[in-house]
Length: 335
Image 1 (cartoon, rainbow, N blue to C red):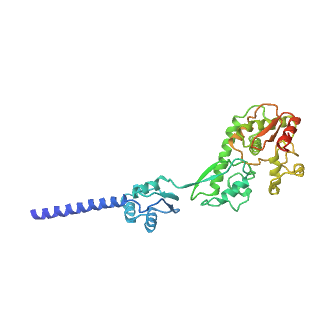
Image 2: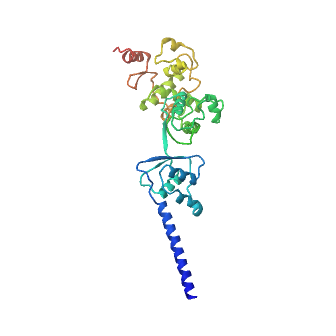
Image 3: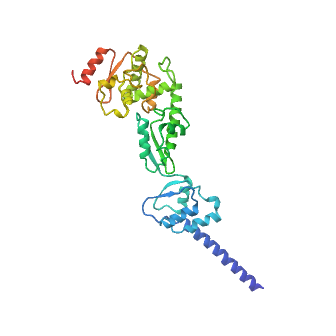
């Protein structure tokens, strides 16, 4: 009997040792470094589970023991990562457990997409269409269809998208970026309008958006934005036309080839502020926050004219005579 008890104890001890050893080996395989010698992109497919992912990683030679990770689905399901579709950057020296932590972090690779201030909606759409790895849901839609998809049916798109650098990851679409940009512009416009100055010549947030687009297209010099807004305000107050070249260009559309003629200035388009009174019917570009703020807080003064110096800044004048002299100097190159 005593010998039987000893034998059974030995069997139990061997079994326990086997279990402990097996567990230690399993943990060792989970902690083994990835078999890569340079940073490697791996894409988690849409809807993939851990078994599929580690199987692919093993097939690609990134890990050696898919079974160790697959065993987790049976023994430690509570520790499984919450997989998110996208690309992940795997680094040399990363262990299997660090890989799982990376997947669980959702720290996917992202790509920048920049829409500069002053761009048109057409330019924005071209940039979206050229973005690598961005799903193209709206590429074949008209502008009207895009706005309807965004829940703004009947809204003219120009000016309603905030210019900035946005980041996207695999699995996102052009519609996701458009929605972010649209909602951001709406939020910023509401904030800026709430801080507007008294006694403006514009009566609504949309008119502020239109005015800001003119300011954005007229100057890239930050210090000039409020003064240009002041010129436009005083012109509207005195009954003068705004006479701003960017509106002529916008009204010409694809016909513009880099030069405005006297005939273009006289052409009666809905946007030609040499012909129409007041603001054009819609924005002509995407204004940034600084131009929006300038539109609702114009600089007081008495200037009514400005002309480009050719270096990105303008010469401002109070009278038509001063303005003509400035035109002679900076445009016609006569002192």
